[in-house]
Length: 321
Image 1 (cartoon, one colour):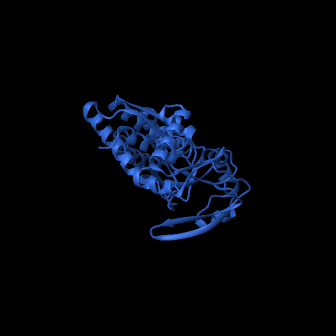
Image 2 (cartoon, helix red, strand yellow):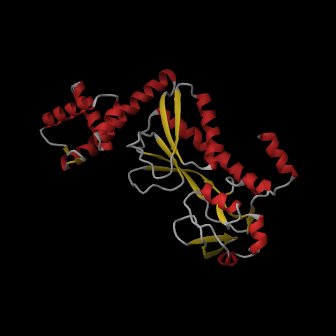
């Protein structure tokens, strides 16, 4: 029978190894750095191998540490999940659920509603949401999961696609009146476009009924913020792409108009990202709930945004606001 301290030291080692930081691990574990460091040192002495290389600026795994981490990570995760499952049986999912999400309008407007519904049904789970642009350090910042609109580069992360957000092309009526409204995709090449990445040009891929067209667009302004690009477009600085639900109110009020509405851009995927498939009950319950609700909410929002602006639609917005 293993000694209880051995099992605890295994869990402490996994926490330090994943974060590559004694200070971050100590905060997550709620224990002094000195105590954590001492336990890891005693653990290495008991094993008889050096698992971590420490310097004043950096902590790295040795080859033995890498091999040991691969072996014990799943054991520690399964033990934690088993404990959480027992707690969930006793009183339902519980604990502090920390979520990272992008600071996009659809998050503020729609994900907030999903979280409110989830919280009302799970009184023992405290949900904390950080609005953070990508990339997010799930381990270092101690997040249980992240909502992402770009697939992470780290192959070790677990990625679940839960929904899509429709994109369109939009311009201010004042700009379109001055420069003319595009009637075909190639017309966009003669317009000022607010480029969504750093640089003076970008390539857009448009499709309609099986037909696809790739065009190169450009303009004097670029930015990496959808909210700022929307502001530039409303100010008449050019044409931009946007999530249709992000600019729904601008279209309704007449500040923006959809350009080439028959042509579509690739949709923006929405992902839930975690560090492991072995999730505690609090995370599993949120992902199961939010996957169903968020997909339905975003699909409805995109469908409503495609409806022509007019009296009926404005009444709908007043009644639901």
